[in-house]
Image (cartoon, rainbow, N blue to C red):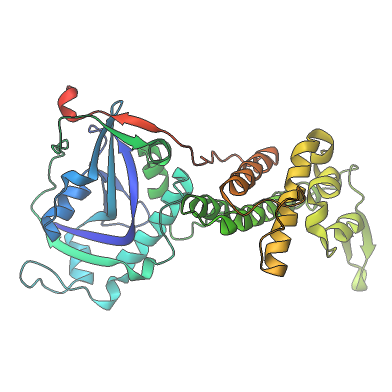
Length: 360
């Protein structure tokens, strides 16, 4: 068999049990299997001569926490014959047609980011991935880290968003057509920016995620409930057309949706019309907070400068302002019914037990 290792220019964190499968099927890609990240440091170490122990952080409960700088695939011989030259010095050179391997990795990483909500996974520079192919008789057996006999401490935010088995299985089931919702990508980018200390970007992306998320939810509601029916709750009318044809129109929604200030009416008039709910009515403090977030976003976009200090009209461009923006965006998306478990950055550490303290 052949093992293909792909480095993606960043890092990912995983929390898996040693008893979890060593391989995961990719139904959309016959001949390719995803290798358990518990094995990746061992494979990477063998391929590029680096120590694997530094990537194992220990155990949190019965889950082994591991960091990788890439992902690996097991490729069957038919796939190898189609996409790889004969090996030289133990390694194979890829044909131009081997791009599907990198594309598979790119799509998988995007899906893993969506399902796990690990905002730090980098997907912007996927074309710059480094690929290594090695021939192997079998996969290595997982061995626990041997770096130390002492317990260590790991940032809580790392453990909270580390990719679990369920995330891997969900991502592997996705084909090349999978696309994460734009508001989800933007909100994860906002969380990532906050972690990196780019608070301006965090606030800007939080506001964009809220507006696009609301517009997405409203458009989906309209398409599923109004366009497909003649519910009395909506003011739809039927207009005659040439040739005896008719067209169903909703003048009220058309007016709301195409107003130049549509973003300002998202959380009251528009959502009240389609859902019979209003953020202003149900949660005025949150409504005022999202209004403040939008005002800050507008000032950043149009003036290119931070809001004036000392005023409550805008968020401050700092850690506190970013935290408010993230909490506001998460709360608004939840109020809209977006069923996603976003994990905001939290301070604190969790104990990672050394393997000598466990019965493995």
